[in-house]
Structures are given as structure tokens and as C-alpha cells.
Image (cartoon, rainbow over all chains, first blue to last red; front, side, top):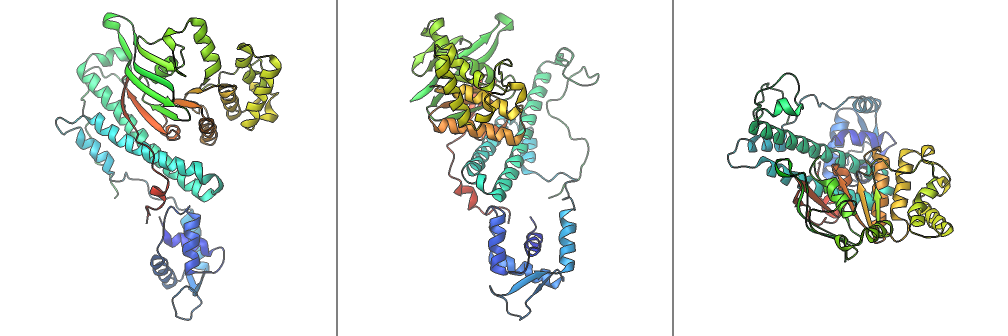
Length: 208
Length: 240
């Protein structure tokens, strides 16, 4: 998450002090992302260096030093808001790696491995839902942050469900090579055995 | 006290080579005021579990008690009475009668149970009012949005003295905002003492439950631990 752009967004409402920026940042993000005051001042110094904000200019850092956004800062903020985040290449996801590795470790029930992670994710989602239930109804920022987290975790659970189903189907087909001709669930003209362990044929870019 | 007790419940369809074990020695207890979600893929036995819990289907083996009464020991009429008085159902596709207004749909189970039409109507209106639908009481189902229809279905499921609410993908046909509203209503019913079982493959839906039970191939394979307080997430300081 970009603290730099979040501070620019807060300053776009009008001049503010460093401490005030920290408090408003936490309040606007539902207090889910705590920010230490040192990080606020370091970021403000860089923004000032880059000409994106201006300070009162007395040279004294501290809680009473005020900051305002410059025209270049406003332009930078607008550009950032309208630039999609880079999601073009898959992240190097530890969970995906664990499932892929579990497929190849002898004596490992990969569906049990999947279930351990599924349960953990659902337990996390239960905690976020409690927050939504108890606090987020009256706090729009918190509701949006909690929704984002729930949808993110939900996507991972859905991937685990899909992986579970795909692995089960692969195992069923391995046990019964004729199954593809009778179930009618496979695509194309495949009629032979399908390997239980999928092979990744293409090398795809991974971002960290 | 457990409103629903399922002990070593199995359900088998077919015979010999065609035998299918839809449920295999399931144990499930749901106390008054608790919401339990049952998660699992298609074919894992979720819906069979729900129909047996609701006495719409009999188990091949095992014991099912609702409000302390063992269902298999009840006569057919007594089971039907139990269904009308103690158990409410919520389905994905609402299952409202199109020729009845919202209020009449909600009052119907009470009228079928012998409550006078006037009393049933008053109870129906009260249930609708509790769910914020008082002004839609005279509307027919096709005049309501999907979210409103499901709220009417929930009102019908909890009207009277119902103690057990059984829901099958209750927000499956709704968008996420209406789906959340539906789960809030079921949650509120639980806070008033109703025991609820929600079967779903949707983790967001399941996360409203106090406990999530995972089914696979007709067996309970896992369940969540009690949920810690929200402070465990809010003070963690992730994302810095």
C-alpha cells in the first residue's frame, strides 16, 4: 500500500500537520493499517524533496509543522488513482507453491494439506466478519477494508476448492482410465488417461 | 441445550454395486442461539444433511433429535407438526407462493398449524416489520426484489416459535450486499435464540457462522475452532 499517495490524498483536502496526517490515515483505513509517526515524517520529507508537498518552511520538524500539497503533487495523485496496479504476472504465492510441492511429496495427502489451509482461511474470514458485524456498519472505511480482505481471502478459498476438485478428478481418472469416455466431463477428444499430477508446461513471469 | 442433535447419521441410496453413501456417520450438534455453517463441494452431502435435519427425509441409520424429540420415533403426523412448529426453511430460490402476498406467505405456516387467520396475519406482519418489510406486506412476490423476497422467506422461516432454521445457500441468488443483509437477519434470529444450520459452498457466507463444519464425501472431515475477538486482527498491524 502506498503511504506516499495516501498522504497526498489527505493533503488534497487542505494543509495538515504530520501528527494529524497519521491520525487521519489510520481513521480512514479503518485502523487496520497502523502507521508509525517516523514513517509519516520520512515520507513527508521525500514528498517535499520531490516537490509534491510544501511545508511551513521553518526548518523544524515536529508535530506543529504544517504541510500542503503542490500542483505537481495533485497531478501525481490523480495519475496514481487512475493507474491500475500491476497484476499482469502471478505473484510468487507460497500457498500455491505448497500445494504444488505437496503433490510430489510421497505419502502426503494433498487434499488434507488443502483442508488445513482452507480451515485457516475460513477462521480468518470469521474474524473479519465479526468486525464487520460489530463495528463496520457505522464505519464506511472499515467496511470497505474488511470487504476487500474478505474478498481476497474468499478468492484463495475458491482456488483451494478448485484445486481440490481438480486433484480429486485427476485421481478418479487415474484410477479409472475409461472414466473420461463415460463421464462426459472432459473437454475435447481426450479418451486416454489423464495424469493425476498436472504438469506446468509454460514458464510464466512471477512477481514477488 | 442442543436444538438439533445428529448422531452417527448415515444415508445410503441404491443397492449393491450402485450403492451411494451420501452421508456417513455424521455427528452434528447445534445449540440454541448458535449458527453452524456446513461447507463442502457439490455432492459432499450438504443438502442431504439439511433435509434429514429438517425431517424431510429419513436417515438410513443414526439418530436425529430436534428440540429433544427423536424424529424417527414420531408418527408421520407428529413429524409434520414438528416441521410446522419448530423448523423453518430458507432456500436459494425463495420458494414463496406467487399467489399470496408477502404477509400471507409469512402467515401460512401458522395457519396450516391451526392458528386463527387473524392471529397468524398479526404474527406475519410482526415478523415482516422486524425485518424492515412492513411496507411491503401487501406486495406479491413478483413485485419484490430478490433481496426482499429472501427477507420474506426468512420472516416465514422464523415466524411463531420456530427454534431451528435450516438454510440452503440462502444468498446464492443475491448480490453481495443483499447476501450480507440476509446473513445479518439469520444472525439476528440466532441472537434471539434460534439455532441455525446454513449449508453453502460460499466461504463469505459461512464466515457469519459461529462454527464451520467441512464435509467431504459424506463425512465431516474438519471444523473451525472458536472465533477469537476482533482485536486479534485490528492490532496486528499488517500491510505496513
